[in-house]
Length: 547
Image (cartoon, rainbow, N blue to C red; front, side, top):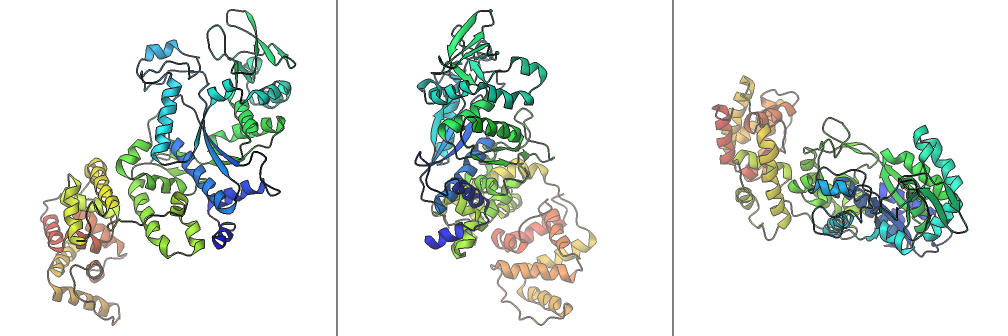
């Protein structure tokens, strides 16, 4: 383990680079609080989404990397800003009129439109906890309402009151003239209406720990800043939370870079060191536009998990967090196959390679073995060729290809077969476009079908290809169950019929026979689908039955 820790201290994998930044904070010794604190924030005015997943998954990766290089204990808190006032009625909840009546109340006071919890905030917090628990994340849940009301923030709130002018100096230059006139870092919770009010602070009494503000009806009210009587505006609130809890690490989207800057200044004004922060790139849709919940573009987490296992989504989240990535349906098969490629590579890697492998950052030291004998992209082509409506059809081919495999012995493979059928029918099938072969392609496909049915013809094609290339390679054993032999036949036919570049030949096979422009190695497909079935598929394509 010590050797692996040494490697981790030099690893270029981004979670280790982040972890080393956190470790530098405590070069002289462990923190007084006794642990390093990682935080993720969540606004419970809506339901958990793919961004929530990504933030917790990535922060967990950094936490795990830190635990590899340091013996200082760690904590991850998922903080819900549930004392925030409800500013607008979400469009995707029932009982809209009831929700409208509760505008400006703290989310933990707003009545639950679903009728299942004490409040809308409690409902969404429960959804968040169930969501995080379903992925096995280790975290401690924290409620803003609970922290404010229990007094956890009182000491820092009193300090913020004392340093009110410093906070205003930081915030006011970032606001427009109209907002400057009414801005206060403190939002009183009205004793009359329960509303979280956005009103100016008229007077401050540091000794008493109170502020004076004016109610909408004109009455002046004096309130303590402690005990949950006020909530801070969100940038000062973020800073106050960092300072009060001693947060060491937090990441956020690049759209919050300015907020991180202001919150860091306020945290310092409160006498504390702000956390190490990572600003990650946001996701784009297929057209390169920023994903927006209101637009409904891009890909939701629920949609991803409809077509692939959560580990593939964690793999996608691991990749280059500071680089913008397009998040749409076409990335799923690639992510699944790359994840399993990394799983298969892991056991044979040295420590340095293992620490750079995404699967280490997903699973830690307990990296599972892949039971995917067939790539996801191959399953999609199988589903296409067989018009599969359920995974049992795919298992018919898988069982011939790998007789020892069963749905029970290979649950990951079984789940992937189900995902592949669903993905094929929802996305691939509607977009399939077959085309007729060109004259060159027709002759080549006819010879390929003939070679797949006759060992002598297959070996002759390979011999002629070798001769044309000036090579005297030893002929392979003719085995129509061997995908390497079948691939060598496909390669030979492409060369003999003058396809340059050769990828045009493979593209032609898929466009003519499977209605797609790309796919896995055709030799592997033929071995899995069956040589006779492949010959029949080529025959149908040449007869024009697929167009």
